Length: 472
Image 1 (cartoon, rainbow, N blue to C red):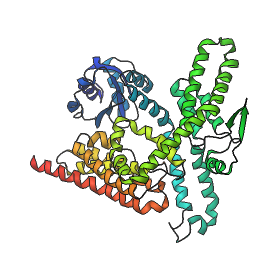
Image 2 (image 1 turned 135 degrees about the vertical axis):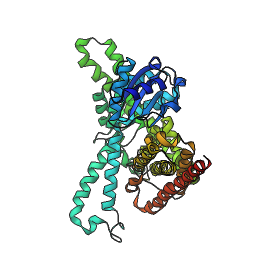
Image 3 (image 1 turned 45 degrees about the vertical axis):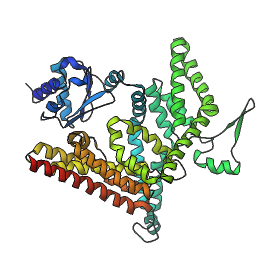
Image 4 (image 1 turned 180 degrees about the vertical axis):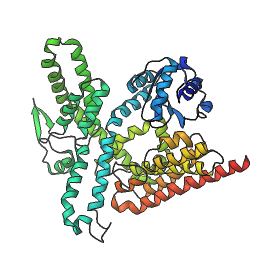
């Protein structure tokens, strides 16, 4: 009997037995199940197992938090004990997707597209934050930036800025690759489609507003139809819709064109048709819709900023539970490419991360005679302070609901503050390091927001934890 044989057997029993497992896989820290009937899960028993740090259900999957490294060994034992085949994450996602309603499937589709490119976007945001530190005045020297005082750093800052901006400049290329994978088409064609929408011979989308005002936009004449020669840098909707169309055309042609001429017909025809549709119809229409989306969010923060902060700051963690938080990445990207050059939402996300960490930390520090919980709370709090909240949320706060609610209260108050003062930031890192992604003029307000997100959840959770301990 192996070291993890007993825990694996206990997990199988707690999730309803091996007969209840349709598919099972694992990621870096979690076991992922597509279960036949989630009502058979004994979550109370499950979370008493030594290796289990938490569990939750999302997007049709039941997930058990184990921890890095250990999860591999537990999974191997579980597969052997249950007599099931090892599955990939895609297999489990497909099995779980059959149980979803249309809204859940739409959210899952967006998540499947954006999650693979998220590391590139977050890295770009982090590097842009570093560039801001180097180039913003009044950080190290009054009225001057670091590169103005130490000019030898200027070219380094410029190189960092170029590296950071690449992911955003060629965002349609990243989305095209990921979307085509999700829609069942060729990822290479998705890359070409995305590159086509940001081709250097087109008017850069960043200059569209000024070009429109001055009447400098050039047009193609397609049989009398005037088509703007405009690129779609940093735009999300055009490439999403275009990728879907391209994938469907490619799949349609692959089923009907003989193998001997597929290379000569499928890709050229699919790309040509999609290209014409993108510039004539898809691009202009989705560009307008994207503008409406941006204007709608801006209208909320222009007319009732405190309400926008309250709702997004207070409910972001709830969105994480449902998986819908991934859909707001598209909104962040649209706002960042708009006239403000930043987004209201990312700073509130960072406060939500911090609040979840503080609530978990308080539970661990003030719960008596539970070393496992103490260890989990401290490590998950550190993770949340660095922008990864799942261990804190699912391992601690949702188990002790008052902690989760305390975190929501703290992030809502912080969100009201950030919304009221119109704090803007770039997509980047979350948690405490997020301050480098915030526009320089808002650092003071954001720092106050961080203090709120640390203190309020911690104090509320500590008070309730102590009250429950004394009552016991």
